[in-house]
Length: 240
Image (cartoon, rainbow, N blue to C red):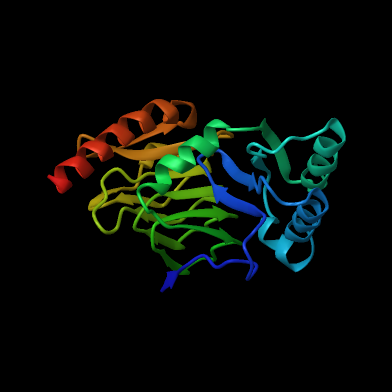
């Protein structure tokens, strides 16, 4: 099945939530009334709608755009985010790197889904575009995506990114010990990883000259720049 993201609210959202390589990005509306914005954030992060954010520790970026904030406003908004025990504030600011990266990716019209929950053993899930999974992918679970796969939890099952042929897709996880990795048609069990204890830092898998490679996430920014240049070249060639 194909799982698509759905809006939590029928009206224009005052907060836009996106998954990034490091965690979650919250983009605050720049023009709404402060009371309305705080009420929206409170409703988003609590109650039934807030359950989507339950799970392991997640780093967050909160970007308030061009909104002018007083110290009291900052404290009021941040207190709502930090009330969640599994949120770790990574960046609070305006025009963050995460926002700029998001704007570039929006030009590629690539869909993104945020999936909350454990992917059970033997369960197959397929996504159109990128997917951010907040939870574990258990052994023999099978996650497929036409774009990237990001797991903020343990990746113990099978992950297949770029199923439609996008060789620039990646697979990333907080704890990396997959049964099998696949990007496009290239398959690897990554035995040296699977047989070692899981690492306490995020790693990502990518194609390097037709072979699957795995690196620490600290190298992702450099790799992403190269991927962006490659995609721009491909897009220019397709338009010619």
